[in-house]
Structures are given as C-alpha cells and as structure tokens.
Length: 97
Image 1 (cartoon, helix red, strand yellow):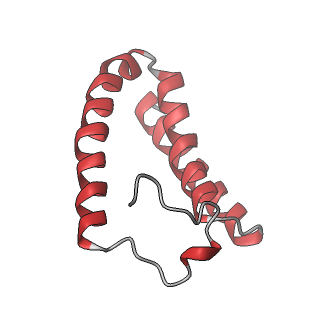
Image 2 (cartoon, rainbow, N blue to C red):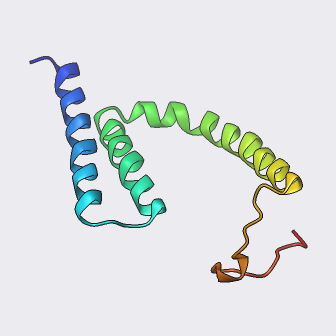
C-alpha cells in the first residue's frame, strides 16, 4: 500500500470516527468544527511539518484581511443581528457595535 493511499485511509478514518462520535455524543458547533478540521490538519502537519511553515503566513494574512473585512461588512449590513442577543455570553456591545 502506498503512502498516499494510507494517508487517505487515515483521513477518512478520522472523519468517520468524528462523525460517529458526534452522532452518539452531540456537542456544540464549535467543538464539532474543531474535531472535523483540527484532527485531520494535525495529522497532515505531523506527516509533513514543513507545510505548516509554508502555509502559516499566507493563512494569517488572508484570515486577517478578508476575515476582518467580511466581519465588518456583515456588521454594517446587519446580518449578525439575532433576536435573542441577550442570551449570549457577552450581551453588551463592544465599541458601540
């Protein structure tokens, strides 16, 4: 069995195991997303650590520029308005927004 096929089988196994875990033990969306994305990412970084060093700077730049810009535009457009906002962990406004 080649290394590429083995890596694909491991990644499919991780996703299947997380899926089964989330079916039997439902958790919040944040934890589910972390399990789905962080475990396969950690495996891939473990297999080839140099890829992390190559990808971290563009990821930070893209995340900061586009992520903050996207968040700001959605805040201006009102798409982050929730009817039950007083039930959030931080119900107060930050910087008037």
